[in-house]
View 1: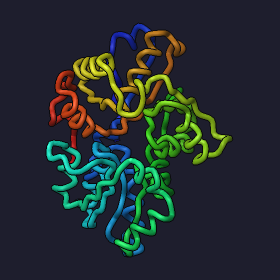
View 2 (view 1 turned 180 degrees about the vertical axis):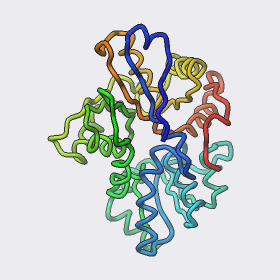
View 3 (view 1 turned 120 degrees about the vertical axis):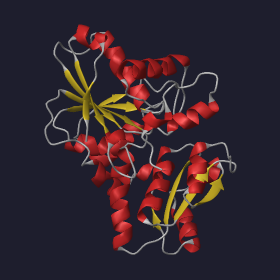
Length: 300
């Protein structure tokens, strides 16, 4: 994995060292943190001779995009239960799923809320008796085991930062980090904080940042998009508007406000999710993220 130092004048003025762990550049057919979440699910499905793989997500889900890549790369049939009204052929995530031969089932929000229930699982297994079911975001025991492999062994840093949606990646990092982990929630409220505690136990400490969600999951504004575009122009590092962009915005705001001590060293985990830029630009043509497609390193 690549660890890249960020060169910005504001960091030099504050005497803060910021490095990024570039999971978006890992040489796998599934990139970002999703590779770590999915690889042991794939191994388990093979071990138990399970097929198809079944999972869940919204119409612009990073998890579904990675799931499609994994099914295609490792020879599984795929079933996706998608929160939404139906197929939109202009949606780059959904077209990726179709191109990867994923069988789509669209379900309404009310039904989607009970997707983890025993009743819904029984319904799935009735239709697909040999299925291996992967929760939304890949957040199960197999996903957690994979996420505990994200951090490199040597960590000469004072703090680790990571963005979170379901909490599985953050939990794996917290469990293996020798230093304080700062978790940037992509969700409004403190629900995710308790979810992470449920996974790692109350004794494991972390710093929960719920100030930079920009109104809630997948919510954005012009300030955030301007920041993402400016950060890319200055560093060449692409950020997505759902997770890493919000995390980096928060880090840099703290740097500019002199929150970190002189000489402080931060490692920010870039969890990937760059396909989200395609969905964002489809929905927000008036305020686009200006990062070339080839720099997104998306699996085909």
